[in-house]
Length: 171
Image 1 (cartoon, rainbow, N blue to C red):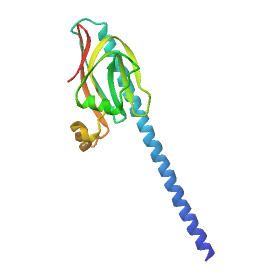
Image 2 (cartoon, rainbow, N blue to C red):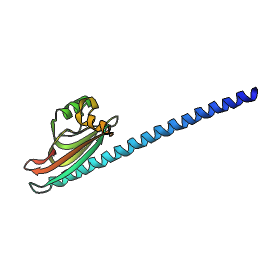
Image 3 (cartoon, rainbow, N blue to C red):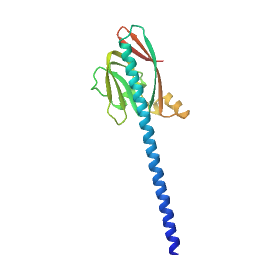
Image 4 (cartoon, helix red, strand yellow):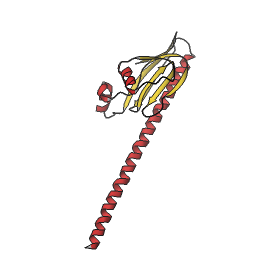
């Protein structure tokens, strides 16, 4: 009788240990995926910064196309004249939904639960507010969710050099 109880204790302990290891591996892989996608977005942000600065120093009428694929952790990408002005998450969502235009010579990216990053541009720029919008507010995110890609928001942009600087618009 004692031997069977010992066996069952080992079986239960093995199952609990297995579930614990599986849970830890799953959470680690989710964390790794979030880090990789966040790094990808930061690279796209850097590319947008570089392309915009190149257009600042180019001739009138020059233009470039750019694509941004943002994940759900990107609260917003916007322009400002003062890098120390920060938007609340709800303000950014309202600006994105309202298709408001931001302007200035600092391009900023706000990532959920992280510090806002701003970089100075070489000229004045105008651009719509960009970012992830909760699914209940966005037809695009609802469509992406139905297509099986719930965490991405894609923006096709046209960057154009004009008299006042660079104008970035959605295509």
